[in-house]
Image (cartoon, rainbow, N blue to C red; front, side, top):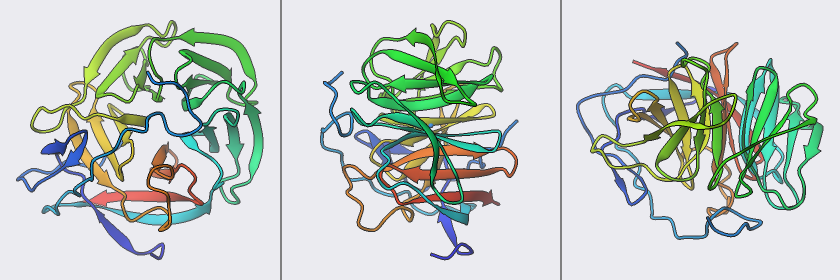
Length: 297
């Protein structure tokens, strides 16, 4: 698909889920594009090997939202992407797997690694976000947040702790107190104090029928909403941080390599670019990173 080709993306209220993944059917309302106002024993692969039900793609609706691929960039096909973040025009990435986890700065145009800081070999890196010049990087089941300098990527030595698994994290700068929003692979988002990492409240994410949306993974806070990858699907959902309601669905099934391993090379990683209003998206072990512009009627 050429950069100028537009592919339909249905950003609409969700009607229901098959098991833990989304199954949408036509309804009479539409949602708008998000605009500012992602315990089992650790493995070297994905957090769980449980079977994933087949997803039924949302049906087209009147007033659908479209995306345009405005750029394609090379991406390290060995990178098990856990999180993307753009900080002052720099692309930062959290890469997972035991004995291979790191945080890195990547040259967007070439895909080359500018600098990287490896984690201890027993740690499995997960999502990462920036707040006030610091990076906060989750670990899968070690229960710690690694705090590092956003300019140098060097570990500050500061740690936060949490119970359970860590999957995705973002900083909700538009909300009062600028809290962190964190996922753990369930249907719940945890709103956490940015100074202590204590849980301030939990938010159950539900679809239009009130059913919980499981497997929330990488997060990206944009205004009063959060975008979340649904693990092992081609979907990014938009969630209202006030109520936990799914207000839109972004279907990216046309992206990604044709020969991708469906159990490993899954969609994961989304970063908002405030200067252009576009989004960077990629997946685990994908050779390409896409820049998308969202538009709609």
